[in-house]
Image (cartoon, rainbow, N blue to C red):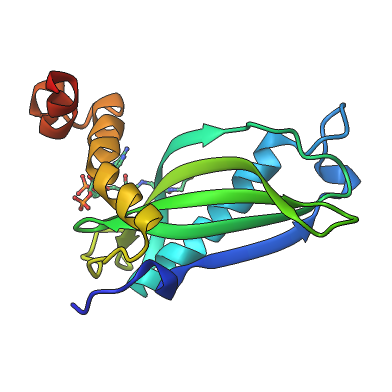
Length: 170
Ligand SMILES: CC(C)(COP(=O)(O)OP(=O)(O)OC[C@H]1O[C@@H](n2cnc3c(N)ncnc32)[C@H](O)[C@@H]1OP(=O)(O)O)[C@@H](O)C(=O)NCCC(=O)NCCS
């Protein structure tokens, strides 16, 4: 399978925050942001694998900044590492200042998607080659995060999480 670069599947979704999508403080409802991030990550995973993809895990979400009603929100998703059938995806969320047009980072998340066939069975995905320093950093740490996610899901014994154990030894 030919290798691909993060830029081949990078996905950007821009949309407004409407009144029906806010909480009682008039900020974007967390579940709405999770859905937008899931949608962008799903498109990136599909572009990378060219297969049906499903969300396997939400590994990390940080709601660092509230996003007010009326904001223009951009969700950017990029594959940070491809394993056998699974792909780790980083999602960065930006809010655009109305007057200056400058973007500032509001939130970020890490999702895991798995490519599957028509019966839902996992299938292999192309390898990923990182190019920029940020892509290389995210790629390097992805195996640790995968092992942590599998341990938390009860799918890997802590003793078998070699990368995680090495982290604590150093
Ligand atoms: C995700 C799913 C396909 C995994 O199936 P499975 O039978 O556990 O298959 P496997 O154990 O072979 O795992 C497949 C891959 O997913 C990875 N994976 C599974 N659970 C994971 C988790 N919690 N975190 C990180 N990776 C995970 C495995 O490590 C494996 O990766 P690899 O092939 O790259 O090494 C299956 O659990 C599923 O269909 N879940 C429902 C998905 C869904 O409906 N999502 C929408 C949410 S409502």
